[in-house]
Image (cartoon, rainbow, N blue to C red):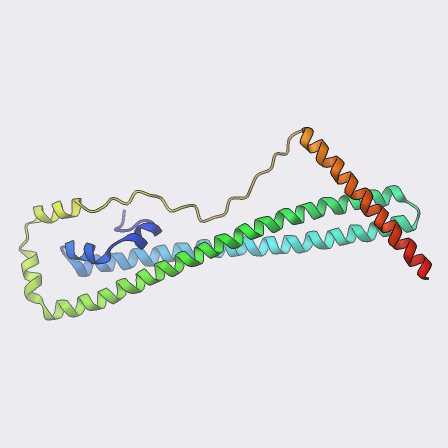
Length: 223
């Protein structure tokens, strides 16, 4: 395991404290920077996947909207041919597609929130990385002008150094899962709530059918 293994460990780490306790601060900060850069790549990769998920949801929403509009047109056609049964079925299909679209829009909102969190995490990590690189430059300058201090550090017993390293805080928390969880839906048999929902959907279809009749009747009178 590296000096840092997860995002929160890096953000919460006290770089100065770690460097002050290190046997070789220059080596230590190189390892820090490497770990930070690798973590930053991982976070950006996760962000890319979430962005791809968002694009997929946006595309799905557009398709559902288009299909719903097509069923609306089919309902009008069926009603114009006095096929009220077909018009009713078409409006039922339209209603189902509208529900799927609304579900996809809720998922899209969740993905948007996740992206905002990832963007904030990337910003924090980038600032921490910039801080580490700044300290690396200062450390190199200090090394060039303070060789004697490094000599004193080399005379420290390895036992004392090991004891100091053992006091480091253990980083055991795992990074929260950065990929959004898609809500699962029960596909089993209908229960009472499902049947009531079907009744409500039928009522919506009836209302839509009556509105469509009125609209077409108005159109025919206008002609």
